[in-house]
Amino acid sequence: MPTENNFQHDELSRKNPGERLRIADLTDVVPPDSPKWSEAMAQHGTSLSQAGVASVVFLHGSLHGTDLFGMQRLDEAGGLKRGYSRGVSGVDALLAAMREERNGIPLLPSGLKPPLPDDGTMKHLLDEQIGDAGNFTEAYVESFRRTINKNLPHPISCQRILWSCEHHHLGRALAAIGLLDELHKRCREQDLGVGRRVLVYAHGQAGLILALVSNMLCPSPITGRPKLFNILSSYAEQTNQSELADTVKRIESLSATTTLLNGVVLDIVTFGTPVRYGWDTSGIGKLLHIVNHRNLRTDGKNWLAKMELPQITMEMPIAWGGDYVQELAVAGSDAVPMTDLAKAANKMVWEIVEPYDGFERWLECARRAVRFPSEGRCLLVDYKDSTGSTNPRDHYYGHAVYTRRHALLFNTAQIDQAFYNP
Image 1 (tube, rainbow, N blue to C red):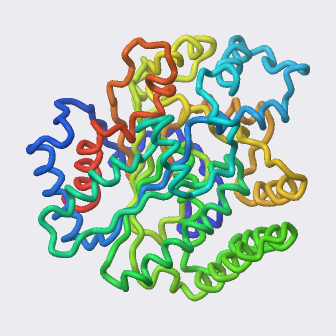
Image 2 (image 1 turned 90 degrees about the vertical axis):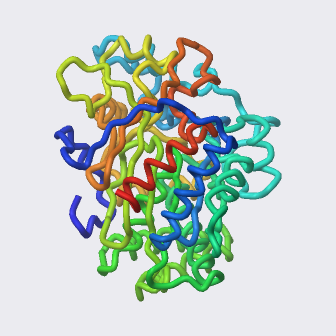
Image 3 (image 1 turned 135 degrees about the vertical axis):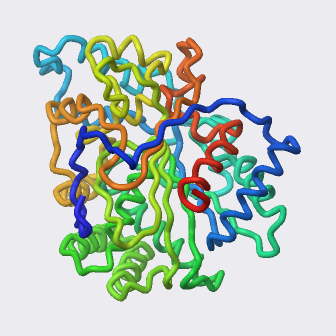
């Protein structure tokens, strides 16, 4: 993507990424909280601190109750009564396996649906219902905080943020505004400036929020930014959300003067994020995309997923090829906003960030089988989470393993090596 990406969609290139790519296996897992584990985490904490990392933010959503594969929009765009297959064998079976009421992923208690509040009660509920499956639990974050700070005179702060889980363009754009506001406050409260870094871990669609953030932080006066801010500001005013309107105006003003983070560098790691929005690297620091992946191809292109119909419907239930949510929740899929005003605003954001629409375009994007964006370093990891189980709650189609506590040290080591201690 160009330096001034201006909210363009990723080009979905299938070319060999070359030196950007590394491949690894999760092996020889050290038991969490063991002396060896704690000491290794402490060493990585020292490395992060020496590199200037002052804060780590864990951004995540919920696997339950959120239409993980984005079937709502595909149903609205195509409709079963019109027929999905278009002559492509296996498509209907694949979509049936992805549909919310058929994919085996439970709903949240009491019918809870997005937007989910970022509060202690909701986070506690997720920790009880989901555990560490695609969820940065309180225990996970506390374990990270305790061990990386073991030998540091000035502790690295750690924060867990639950985004609203509104899996559509408007929801992600509003989440990007909220995250930037939170990062601005954090830099101000901790008196952070030039020479300091904030590291963000973003799971799943939370990574798309960071892609939008990267475009918002572009130091050049790109044309898409005022358009997007205007849409969000108008939506806030139309829906009588005065606090949101104030936040949008504040972020717009700060981004125009490039003082939003007060000179602090933003480093980003995404875990299993579908390839959709393009990234602008001119206003951020380091960027790494980690994807759960097992090579099933026979053409030597091991950096691509395998997307062949109808075989994929047999692979998905045991997460045979890795992360199927990352592979399939691409352009054209999404949740549908609940109100007419939200739908109208979503359509306007859509026209800026994603040119793809309709079932045929979704199928085209999915079949490209691209595992990571055109910008940033890439790490394909076999997390060994395909055990033959057909129970989605054991693997959530390969999308849950990134936040498992047994993978915490491994992920920390990979990030440290890629970013701060090559």
